Image 1 (cartoon, rainbow, N blue to C red):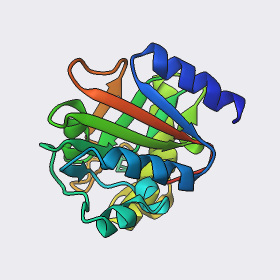
Image 2 (cartoon, protein in one colour; image 1 turned 45 degrees about the vertical axis):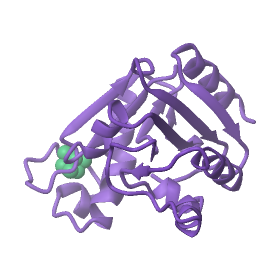
Image 3 (cartoon, rainbow, N blue to C red; image 1 turned 180 degrees about the vertical axis):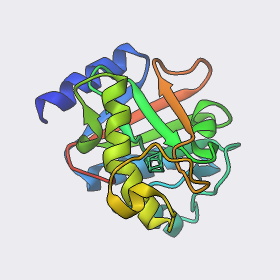
Image 4 (spheres, rainbow, N blue to C red; image 1 turned 120 degrees about the horizontal axis):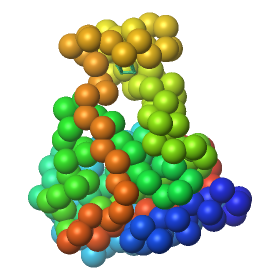
Length: 189
Ligand code: SF4
């Protein structure tokens, strides 16, 4: 396990999150499936990371394909960025994913690859999201935004803008179980 992952795991624990460290995406998938055994209903806000580790397909095979809803036992997502001092940062276009990560599910489970960790603070995290996550996501979703065309954020006024709601978790929210699965692989963007 690399040093930055260990440092980030400790910081997340201090902020109230349960943390499981995995060397590979395959290990992370096993962890997701194990926790999913205890859930009757599962939600997901859309995540390339969960697709890449094969969790979505594996859950569908068990008859528990994640739904696009938040009133579930277990809600799965990743993070757009994670600071090494343990703060999770997510940006949404319509806010459904971040809303579900704050309230609704009994448990929230993040699967986060090492490439999402930034060593600076929140500004660094947001810069990473605008640089690394928004352009490919806009292209993937067919959005007509400057970053989709040029790869660079122009702080646009486009109706297709996907960064409209920013949520920073300074601590685990009260009344909701939250587990972070940190993976020592690059996953998602
Ligand atoms: S503000 Fe616009 S250009 Fe910048 S990352 Fe968001 S969608 Fe892309």
